[in-house]
Amino acid sequence: MCGIVGYIGNKKATPILINGLLRLEYRGYDSAGISTIENDGLSIMKDKGRVKNLNNLPGIDDLEGTIGIAHTRWATHGKPSKENSHPHQDNSKSFSVVHNGIIENYNELRKFLTDNGYTFYSQTDTEVIPNLIHYYYSKDTGNDENKILRAVRDAALDLKGSFAIEVISKYAKDQMIVVRKDSPLVIGTCEDENYISSDIPAILSFTRDFYLLNDLEFVVLKRDSATFYDKDLNKVDKSTKTIEWNASAAEKDGYEDYMLKEIHEQPVAIRETIGSKLSEDAPIEFPELNFSKDYLASLNKIYIVACGTAMHAGLAGKNAIEKICKIPTEVDIASEFRYRDPIIDDKTLCIFISQSGETADTIAALKLSRDHGAKTLAVTNVIGSSITREADYSIYTHAGPEIAVASTKAYTSQVVLLNILALYFAQVLEKNDTKINEYKKDILELPRKIEETLKICENIQDFAKEVYQEHDVFFLGRGIDETVAKEGSLKLKEISYIHSESYAAGELKHGPIALIENGITVISIMTDSKLVEKTVSNIQEVITRGAKTMVVTNQKVDQKMFDKTYVIPETNPFISPILSIVPLQLFSYYIAKEKGLDVDKPRNLAKSVTVE
Image 1 (cartoon, rainbow, N blue to C red):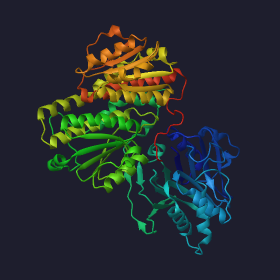
Image 2: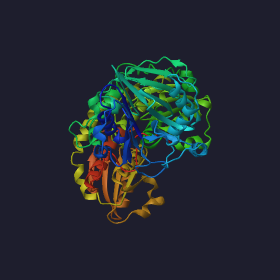
Image 3: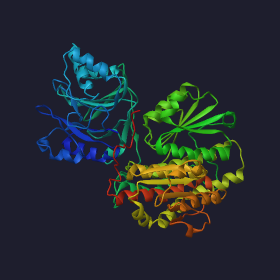
Image 4: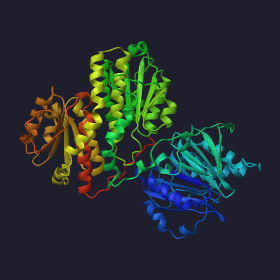
């Protein structure tokens, strides 16, 4: 979704702002712009298209301001255009604003402001914000240093929906005001400088010390200070949190694309996620959780709630929890969960997965579950993100920054963490220790086995070249392999724009086989010895109808049957999705490359979906 950057310090703001926007390009956007405080007032430079286009705007090199705000927009209200690009200003050009989120009552506010003499030049919901700030500023008879702060606070309290907002004004040339509600915003701080962003990697090269904002916390930023206020404008004490990510992790490090780099980072990401939680000879440790045996034994259901790829990770987690712990587990799409009146009470544990920790649908589902008395557990990659502040408990993957829009290492890290969590539950419930120890050993071997899998798949580009012009591709699997088929199909759709579908292989005869015709590509995953024979029978059905086939397996099969077979290392089926997805990630990547597409920034998609 939209990206936000801000700077206040002693350096020229423009190059810092543009560099920050470039680091946020992975979020998806259609226009970009900046606004700085200059000697003669507020500048504004913006246009539709890529961030790099800003460098060509007349006059941008003449900007000298050391305070500025910047934005990449992903169109919601109004088409991509210069007029709809951020930043936006009020009619008097006294305030510049950038905004991430959705203002649900903008029509009502727009009418109110129009009735009070304000004119609008864009189709956006955002344009009401600077004009509303100006309205309250003009009505305030005070003349103290907090006059702008009061105007921003009053305007923010009128807004319904989600927002992260940066405000600069010609009336205060030494400060910036920021506020957030249900949309991400962080402040990075160092000596005589403050950096603001919707995402940590954009400013990680400048500082590792961050302020993490709660909803409706207002911050007055100056070069050497950050003063925090609640919605009643009482001062709030706030301490920084140090982020340990390596800034170079957000660079390509010699790889052609971030996605390819992140696929190859999976062994390291999984080692980091395993961390100190699990070792072969010691109990599993989750010091942040205090679940007792009585509590886990009392559960009548676990819900795992997430969106997209994170939901597919949840399906793998469901398999592990049910098989190891024998607790009924359901996986729900977050955007549907809230509206189907789910059965939740104090005997329900709800687990919410979000890579960014800012996914709006997932956070809304968490709040609903909490209100119904369930304990809530967040699984995320970002310390201090919104979901962690809403949940009763939080556990973290340690995948590091993931820049490509299509998730790879974050997905496999989520699956690993959910499997470790399932083993932890089994340990608390005093299940079979021998089985737990076997599973622990399997998980500890995963990083090495992923390295082997990457080597096995070095020639997968050759098969991608054979099929990259296909219009339809089908993925088949049974049991745990069906969850991998879903994720493999999603990856292909996301970055290659090829229509693909996944099916439970046993359902092929019940309708989908009508779609099989000569030359079509079918991909199958087979990692469970109990199901391999039946899956092979299903693949024979499509082969006899002329399909090209690619198989990912760790079982003994007749490879001559298939056009291409990738034999990955053998492992326990309950963690096999972590290995079997790797060839499908690479397959999708190389198909997109053959088509000449932007792998890291696929059309219409955003990395962090912060609106519902």
